[in-house]
Length: 298
Image (cartoon, rainbow, N blue to C red; front, side, top):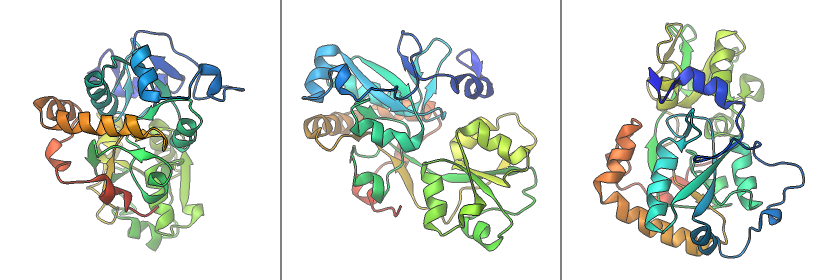
């Protein structure tokens, strides 16, 4: 399937070269350059006030459709940026500028003022919730394994990985799935860190890993039209996963106003329509709270 000019596969190949992308603007350098401590950009002070004055929020994102996506024209999209953009408009902020960064650098970069918010499908868990202010949940998701067709190693659960010491599982370094494996005491020599979705798929095809652990929808996108591999049913022993948008601990005003605007949007068709466009169901989020998701170990 072609998506906004690129196939999903082409997107992962090309987006790996991208750094920061502003809507309607040029591709910038990745994540954080030498000597960039945030202060050089004039950050600090009241983030919400500054964002309203500038009409812009800088956002930490990933390269993982349907959560985040960068189009051929440079537009930052995906379910998380699209929800973020809609909520920010209610706060009088019209534009976002996305900075592509690894998951394990999203919170450090936020704390270092390299971006103002993270909207990347950064799933909540205890360690992350201790470091940032999460909005109320924007999405709830399931996890699956990508395996060779026929699932020769019969990998269906985290427990099935632990039971077979010869099995290796690829996971994005610093991502929620790597943490799930570690928290389940899966030995480190059974975990294969990878940098992005395409690398995870290639690791399985090349025999460096027997499975790739990632959200179900992300794997479905990655393997669209690929007959060599398949996606398992949702992993039963993976914890409930869900994401919100992450703010710095001292950005309490921004966080509070954002949550109020998000709650208002959730009452409209706009929220459900955005989630449906990317394959999510708004009803899955109903009743799920930040407090509940932040109780997830890890």
